[in-house]
Every structure is written in C-alpha cells, then in structure tokens.
Image 1 (spheres, rainbow, N blue to C red):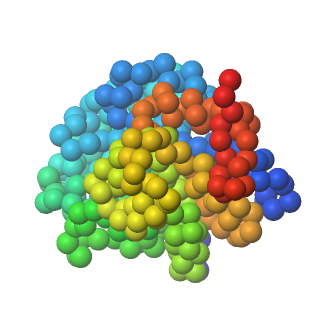
Image 2 (image 1 turned 90 degrees about the vertical axis):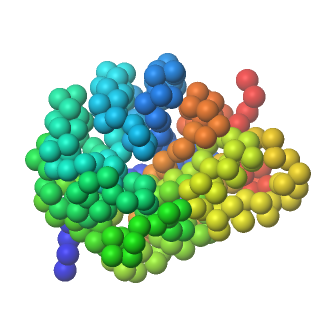
Amino acid sequence: MYHPRLIDDQPPAAPAARPLKQRIMELVADCSIEVTPKTWAKQPEVSQLLPRGTRVYIAFLPGEAWAEVARTAAEIRAAGLTPVPHCPARTILDEAELAAFLAALQAVEVDQILVIGGSGERPRGAFAGTLALLRTGLLEAHGIRVISVAGHPEGQPAPPPPAEMARHDQKWQAATARGAAGRLVTQFLFDPAAILAWERRLRAEGNPLPIHVGIAGPASLKTLLNYGRLCGVGNSLRFLTRQPGSLLQLTRTTYPDGMIAALAAGLAADRDSRIERLHVFPFGGLMRTAGWLAAVRAGRFTLQPDRQGFAVDED
C-alpha cells in the first residue's frame, strides 16, 4: 500500500471535548494567507499582524516575472514569515527556467512551494500540467521539502484538456514520490458542508495528505461574487447568495465566521478528517484580513448561536 511521508507539522490535538470557541481559535491559530508581489510591496507592514513563521503563499500570476516572486519570497523570509511561492506549470517555459526559478528561491531558503496547473490556456512551454513539473525531480533537488498541490472540490474555472488533467491521487503520489512532505490546499469555498463531504470522499479514495481549506477573508458580497465567478466556485456562490437578503446588500461586508464555526464543529464530530488548517484569501484587503484574523486568534469574539457564527468584539 502506498505510504508517502506526510508533512511534519503536527495538527492540533483532537478537539471533540473542547468548547466551540476554543476549537475556532485553534483552527485559525496556524492559518496561512495569500499575497501577490504587488500587494506585499504596498503593505509589508502586514507582517506585524501575522504570527512569526506564518506561511505566506505568493501568487505567480499570468504575465508575472518569476524574479518578482523570488524577490517577494526574500522579503517575506526577512520579515520572519515562511514564504510559499506558487509554481504554475503552464507558465514555466522549460526545465532550464524552472531550475533558475528554484535556484533563486533556494538562495533565500525557500523550502515550501505550491504547484498548480496555472492558466487553462495552452501551455507556454514544456509543462502541460502539474504532473509533468512534479516528475522532473527539480523541486527536491533545489531543497524543497514540502510540496503543496491544489485541491479543486468544485472543479477549475478553465480546465485543461482531459488528457492534461491530474486526479488528486496522481498529484499526491507525484508530490511525495521523492521524499518530500505533501499538502493539499483547496480553492476558496463558502459552503462548509460541501467541503466536509468532499474531504470524506477523498479520504475514502485513500488520501493521505493533510488538507488546508481555502476561505475568503472579510470582503463585500459583490467582491466575493466577482472572485467566485472568476475562480469557478459556482456551487459555493449559490450557497452564499441563498443567505437571507444577501443580494440586496451587495456592498455589505461578509465575514467567514459561519464557515469557520461550521468547519470547527464538523472536525470535532469527525476526528479522522484530514482537514487540519485554513488558507485565507484576502479579497477584501490584506491588512483588513490580517487584523480580523489576529482578533480571532486572540479570542476577541463572541459566539452568536442564532446565526451559527461569531462576531469579533469591538475595541
């Protein structure tokens, strides 16, 4: 039976007997956050709101130069945080460019990376998708010890041709084949029941990897709808817009408290779940999201059972 080495950071202890508020704080305590090189350059002071060692994923967007991603990784490392650059397979030209990118990351002690397929358009060069890049062995050769791969519970907005699509089991086997630890990081979603059900299906298929669930930080409903359409999370959007009065309040701020509370409760009821962490997308602003997360980590919130969520206490 296939037994890859799992990531060596340890999940919280089984939470079944602890109060919901404590479970929420534990779930948020070690969450990661996503930035682009441009947003980080504008707001490097966000590092003051993040616990030391926080994993900061660096998006590698179409048209971005890999040197900018490497520069941002160096700045994040210097700020006492852990950079996790994206590596989009269809954006990388060939093995020589991949090796140059990885060498630049190795020079600033990057040892974690997220491999994604990237744009659904025609590959720029040699890599049709995630598997082709993972199988080069270049990641491990350049000191990468933790390889994250993407999870798409609701599919991809612009999927590649069927021959280039990788199953989850192919991803986790390729990511851990040479001794690196593995991690599965999902797209952002709004429906907690859907993500819990998806995790159970993957577990039944033999998934051995810890899962980090993507959630959206505080943002206006209009912003979330726009990003949701771009990223192909249609089922979650339907969940979001079914909330009472939602479409009449497009400019109101929507918080992920209900999602977090439901996941915390779901994990307490299913102690075998592979869901261990949260990964936060700050669509409503990097500083705003980091500040809200800091308040939740500190326990400055009040449970609101009537709305199945919680509210951060005002200072």
